[in-house]
Amino acid sequence: MMELLSENTLVLETERLRLTPFCPDDVDIAQDVMCDPKVMLFVADAMTPEAVFENMFDVVKRGAGGRIGIWCITREDTGQKIGYGVLTPVPIDESDTDWSQVVPDAYPRDQIEVGYLLVPDAWRQGFATEVCARLLRFAFERTELPEVVATTDPDNLKSQHVLKKCGMRPIGQKRAYGYDDVEWFEMTRRDWDAQNASK
Ligand SMILES: CC(C)(COP(=O)(O)OP(=O)(O)OC[C@H]1O[C@@H](n2cnc3c(N)ncnc32)[C@H](O)[C@@H]1OP(=O)(O)O)[C@@H](O)C(=O)NCCC(=O)NCCS
Image 1: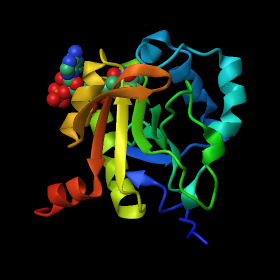
Image 2: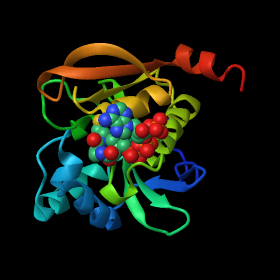
Image 3: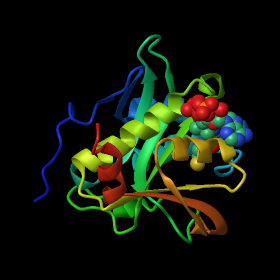
Image 4: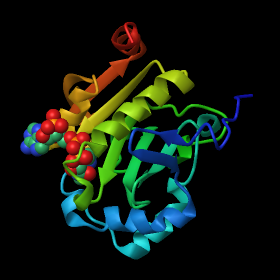
């Protein structure tokens, strides 16, 4: 039986942010993010508030003893929720996460990707970089994953820059989310160990 991580262990702190496991009360920030066409430009079609509400049943699920799922991002200084970060299975042919793979006592079958979506007034302040670095640290310190991947639209240069800043390697274009030209990034456990050996 897989060890269930405590609620405290799943609260992740960074210099300026607090990441907490996504819960039904986070429907407000989910709607702010998913219903904004500017945020969704390189991600998917913007959703209606009703569709986001209905989706909450899935997006609060946690897999692998709590290790896999979505985290709400809150600014420590203002208490404002600014978006969310994910460690979730990357879909290849489907357009959305396969939540049936997110079960309490096993790792999902598909590779795990790190991701982040922030509301526009939180952009360009280094927050995505802070979130991505923290989720990678969690993934390599608290899970047994052999690697973490990331996928972006070819034109989402900002997000690609964030991934590279966090030490992820571009591995070219491959299929994901039903598209063939998605930019993939990877960090293996060996990459992580090498990058952190001197720290
Ligand atoms: C992409 C996103 C997460 C970036 O968040 P952010 O908090 O603004 O990112 P950061 O401030 O940590 O870093 C952005 C970096 O990209 C750089 N950048 C900005 N525009 C860029 C561009 N057109 N090309 C390359 N780099 C760019 C910034 O200079 C900054 O790098 P620096 O710190 O070295 O100067 C945010 O814009 C967002 O939520 N967008 C909508 C959702 C989304 O696309 N999510 C990613 C899905 S893969």
